[in-house]
Length: 175
Image (tube, rainbow, N blue to C red; front, side, top):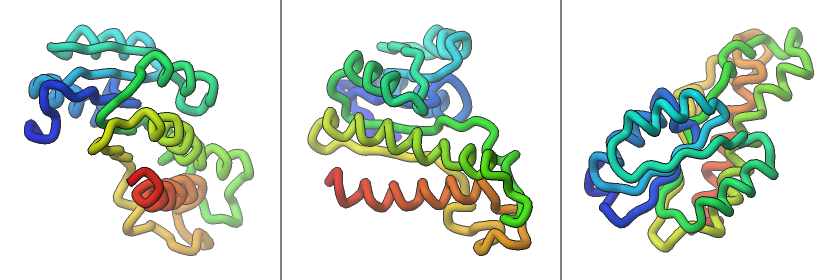
């Protein structure tokens, strides 16, 4: 990991206040990267900022709110690497399609829309040679129920399949 984050690179972590995002922030900071954390949870964000050693900035941002995302990236400016690991309770949205409410199906797509809003805003600010990393689950590659009729898939599966699509599209659009 250290070779990927040289001292002079800015690494933005959306969902950086906990879990995988926080761990990536710690590793990148240890390698000398300039870290920018973003999260909806101000308390966890501040705890992460204080814990991570190095050049660390922290901003409250809701990736589901386009205005919040735009304001965040205006403050961040240019960046070299983006990691999106933000997650909520998507795994609680599983149901066969015959039992899946519209509200849960829409909720399942929030990870997709948040990732889309952030990736779109970051793309125009990305320095040459930059990268975007979208963290999801293994069900992107091995869905629990590909047809959603009799299994667990539901709203969560809709979201991760949408995330797979945006990842493939971003690969071609950004580079």
